[in-house]
Image (cartoon, rainbow, N blue to C red):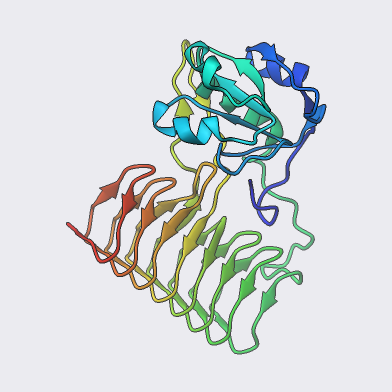
Length: 281
């Protein structure tokens, strides 16, 4: 479920509206489910108020045990659906999910309203020992811990949290992320940008809203011009003590374990899990 620090959800929507948006057929409705549905979620986290989907059999156990109120399913998996769920039958569940998620989150590309025209929002929380260089932009709800330095022209978007004793270089962009203590981020890094999520279609592909975060644990170092995309529904995570070189690309939903070393120009594809103390180069 999307973090309300970063995302504002529309809705709720009833099953008929969801089916129309998804271009899907209502197969069954369960009387115990609520008539309105409030958000999207992955199968294993969904509750009776949520819409989820399955388009890959690797998640079949999550599907069979899901508590989702509505699940978008392909025709060949209808028989395996949990009895508690209402079903939306679609030949392209991922495309149908993309359309429904876009209806819950229609304004992701619109800049969030700020309560101030100041470079440093009065609604941010910055420790008195933190140091911000010239031209730093800090949006509403940002938190910056003690003894943290932020370099010139860095932009920290709404809701971002940075722990104590961290060092952020110049011309960095931080969005949709929670950053731990003693983290070093070099020049030009982009964290929390849109993941590359598209549901293939014809004649056009459907953009899949990216509704997760980036979680950077303590003692991580990130090299210049590295990009770490936020998750699609789950989070992208960089584990404690891991070190990333310059020009590394971390795609959405990637999990990097503790103490990993990743050298320059490595790209890690979406939803990859890297265990602890792995060296990649």
